[in-house]
Amino acid sequence: IAASTTKLFTATAALASLGLETRFPTVVERKGSARTVTLVSGGDPRMTNTKLRLLAKQTAAALKSKQPARTKVKGKLRKVVYVRLDDSVFTGASKLRTWRKGGYGLGTIQPVRGTARTTVRSSDSAASAARYFAKRLDSSLGTGWVVEYRGAKTAPAKARVVARVDSDTVHTL
Image (cartoon, rainbow, N blue to C red):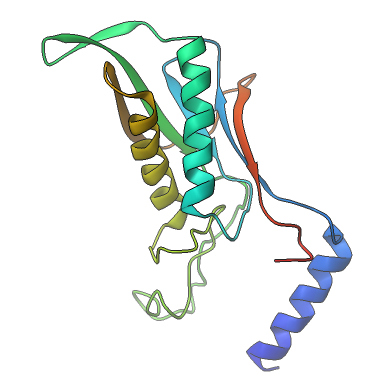
């Protein structure tokens, strides 16, 4: 079966399974007044920089209302925030083993990730989104704060949502 035909079957199965109005949430979670926030990928295939900036602004407001303890950074007391990525929404291989070594060019096939940025081609689009989010969060918090991206890690149990954006509906995707 041709790949284009397979895509039609996949799209039909997704619409039947999920429904037309389903949206994929991307959230930022934080446990208590911890200095770590976790960007939790929800499957949005069209994560825009605008959505990431909105998440950063919402997260900055939450951090400012319940600030972490200060830490000495380069001789100055700063409020340090660590950004983690929870990209565990999809399990299994991110690409097929049958793809030739190194895979195809990123313009042809993207590995499966929980977040796909619309303007960036990357071997790890979710990590790219998390790094961009961390930069925007740093800008939103302003002076006296330090934001650092710390890589992937599952969100802690009992963390609460401090920011949220949703994808378009499945119907529009």
